[in-house]
Structure formats: structure tokens, C-alpha cells
Length: 285
Image (tube, rainbow, N blue to C red; front, side):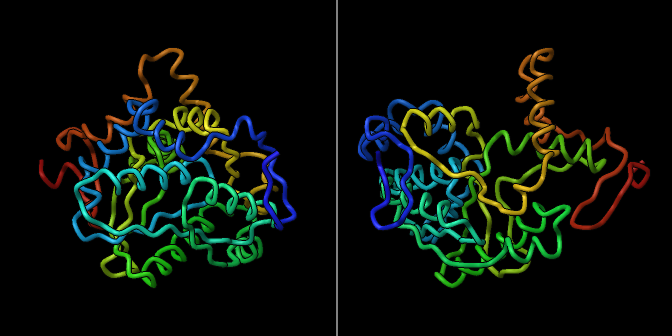
């Protein structure tokens, strides 16, 4: 079994299933070119996420999405004609020791030179927002990542949100908040000057990430949250299941939900907000 020397944590990954790093890297360009590499590069180019001279902090949570993001970025850095710097950062918000060890093992095996820094987010969230922890946790973690990226001289932070996160966010906003709002491929930080958030996995499907992770023999961690572990339900999970059910009746419903954010007819909506200013169709009637 593959373990962690001196860590006190043995990860249950048979050596026969844990693929060599060279094979994993090659598969990203060859075996998974259509599913992972091509949509990754498409998102970067279409939304102009990477420019010459950028210094990008790739945020690694330890889950399947961020591990893939890191490896794709390493390959893009090798093969792209664009010159930019990469930093791999991971915040420990209060992980159990086994989760932190697992994160370190995965990054070591994948050749990701991650910098781990501590920030006791779980402890704070558990104290002040136990009923609805995930939103506050995400905001606090993002702020900590921005601060670390700024410290390293980076101008961008890359997160591992993928295609399915995007469409689930659209549906959650419609069903739970009564508004149409998507997860943007990139946006400027409101609290950190000259800092931008980018989501290079914007076109990558979650099922393809799962397949890659499983066939590579990886054992990524879950969110590792000691607060969310106490919760028995999740609206995001319910929306994920709803979209899957709709797919049985409506062909390519996931693609239609995604494309709806690119095909908004402003002359056929009642109201909208632009940079905090609210308007209705009557303003231009």
C-alpha cells in the first residue's frame, strides 16, 4: 500500500492502481485531450484568463478538481507560448491530520510544489455560522487565498470550479434566490487591488474529472470540513440531482442551462442590475 513516510497516515491506494506521474501527465495531453485538455485551453483562451507576465496562484483544496487544475496548469506552462509564473498554494482551514497528510501525499506524488499555510477558518465558522456554514467558509477561504497570493506577488488566483458548478449555480440562484446569476469565468477582486479570480475548468465536465482521478489511481480528499460534516442535507446536492433528473426528459438540458448565460435577450426581461444600479424595461420602454 502507498503510504506517507513519517506522517502516521497510510492512504489506501494499492501501488498497482497508483499511476506513475509521467503516465498521468502524458494522459492529460493524449488520453484525456478531448475531455480535459481541450476544454481547459478553450476556457483560458476564450475568456483571456492568462496573459504574458501574469503570476498565478493556483489554489489547491486537495479535492479532485483542484488537483487536476494544478496538473493542467503545469502542462499549459510547459507547452504554452505565453510566459507566466505559477505558484501552488493550499490553505489548511483546520483539517484533520489525516486530511492534511492526504493532501500532502497527493501533491508530492503528482509533482506539485504546494505551499501550505494555516488559517483556522473551520473554528471560526463553527462558532458563528453553524447553521449555514458553507457560504461564510467559502468567503473566508477566498479572502485568505487572495491575501496569500498578494504576499507572493501574484495578480491572479485560479480556482477549480467546473462546468457543473456553473450550471448548478445558475439553477440555485433561480430556484432559491429568485434571480438569474451565473458563476463568472473571471472577475476582479473587490477587496484586493489588481487581483483577479479565474476559473480555467469552466468548460470541463465533472464526470470527466472523476474518470481521470479514478483511472489515475488518485485518492483526493473531500472538502474536509468538520462543520459541514454535521449537516445532513445540501441544496447544491439537491440541485445536482434535479439537473440529472431533467436530463432524462430534456435532451442536453445541462448544455442549455449553461448556454442560457450567453443568450440573454435584454429586450425580453423585466428587470436587471448593472454594477449595483437596478433598472426595469419601463426605463427604456
